[in-house]
Length: 233
Picture (cartoon, helix red, strand yellow):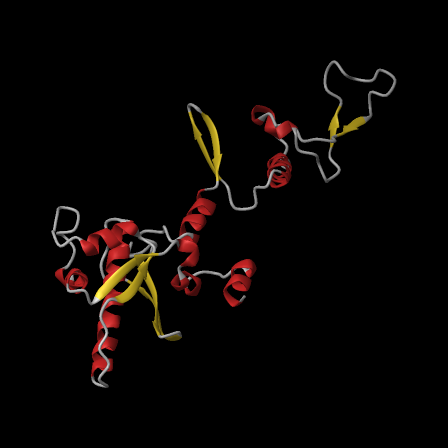
């Protein structure tokens, strides 16, 4: 589509008539008028006709979400920023997802044996400066829950070490396994750093799990049919 003449490409649904333009007057029927098949500049129906024609073209090419159109001296750029953000959210890369506070959301589940005993999806109480930091805060919160349950089991004479904790962020795992504080982590509140001590003492053992196998994610996002069938299969 030639965007420069966009208003001339929209077919009209209404009946619109115009007088014969100069130079194209029928000498045998000068009183007759022309019926427009497509819009002209200045016609009030032109913007709607152009929009409908453009929408039909774009949807035929697979565009289904809202479009963002940006005009600059280099040209007109059409993108799907909203759709891209939804994809990031789907794959757990929506750092600072809350538009009001810019806080991230933690999600986690806890098993006792093969039984699900705890699930959590909660907005964090601090603003993370990176996605890795947000995952680190979430990992620390899960560790606190695990340590609480470990203490309860000790009252029944059950003692556990090397408790597996799964996370889909290798950066967060690296933060937790590194006992040294550096410039990227020293600003994080001290109460989130106790997981380092638990890892160092051998109480907690961290494992990386890919996003598609991260069970906690299915509680915080819409569950596709194929993913549901995989989980129950």
